[in-house]
Image (cartoon, rainbow, N blue to C red; front, side, top):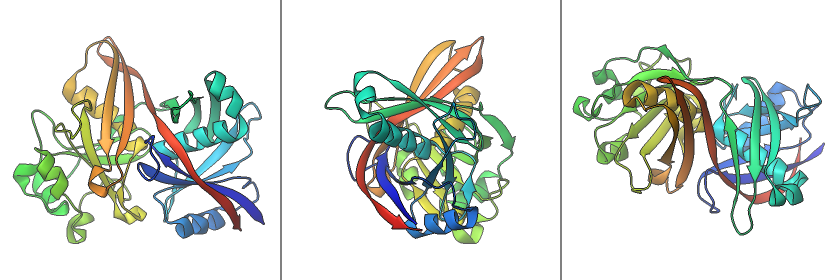
Length: 302
């Protein structure tokens, strides 16, 4: 069957930057094995397959695959799929006012607000369906350093220490002492399997030394066992990073905006906007937002 697909660059307002995403429409009759094979064919960090929603009040069901496995939730597929639906199905509406699009994912229903102001890239934002939580303990710094081709002294800055957090997908978060250490980090596969405890180790390395002084955090994400050697922008990790912020930064009550730069070391600069809502010292809500641009479309016979 011939189906339409689209390629978007997500978490950027510029073509050929950000994190590329494939979105395939009208996939009600595709089974899991077929979707996984198509995701491997596109060979992007994620591919989204849109199906009819289980609840007719929602917009669509979104199934998300890396080249090797299905994910219950991911940020750049959510942003990209919402922007695509807005542009293709409600272009005039989002040009006039923000439009809510509800995507059903394994983690839950995600309400995405899409807007497209004149002469600006389309943007989407969604509230996290699940607040971040600690889901395990990382190995010691020496193991992390070996796995990332770094020295133990490169690990950590200020009061930040490694930890394992999830807001739907688990990541090992590794703070590093400098932007130079971040640039030098790369997986050493001889030690990678020691990272755990998540089933498929995904490591988010971050520093507070940014390339753009208007940004707050710079990061890289490695998940070779998922078929993602390095990800240009990782919304699900940014979502879990809200827990890291609460644990080590202790933001005061109110609304906070954190801009995370990622992908710069890959030549795919990306900016993820993480929003925090803090009440009585506790995180009560968080959001992920960013821009996306449609760069290609076509048909695939599957």
